[in-house]
Image 1 (spheres, rainbow, N blue to C red):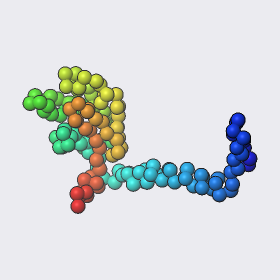
Image 2: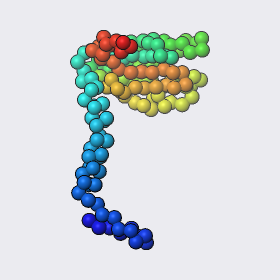
Image 3: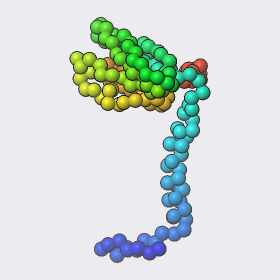
Image 4: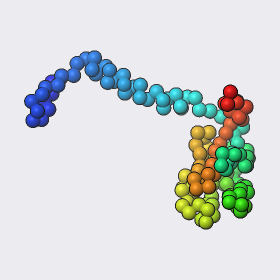
Amino acid sequence: MLRKLHGSGIALQAKKWDVIILFSLILISFVPALLFHFTTSTGGGEKRIIVEKDGREIFSHSLEEEGQKNIAFPFEHNGITYEGKLEIKDGSVMLHRLPEEIVPLSIHEDMGWISKSYEIIVALPIKLVIKIADDVYNEIDVST
């Protein structure tokens, strides 16, 4: 395969090993995504909704696979107690709009529904995180 660069007069020739190496590098670039996909939980245990504020768990509730319901949870920010509302529907959870005085933008609500252990909802100005955890992983101590 012989190609000339326009106006430069340089001829480049792709050899068999160049193509093999390029193809191998492309395949290797997919390895991290595949590892992440195969090592995430497939739902061996009961799923729980975990609400964290400033890195500490403040609320936990089981995630039902069927039905729909709304759950309120209290949290404190700058000495004032607020109430957050979670909507659970068919194994997914969504955080409703938090008060505008503490979270001016509704990005956390726009994140929508989460149902997997690697998905999260974040209300960044107040450091509030909603995530889903499997009981299988809650028993593992990752600090050791």
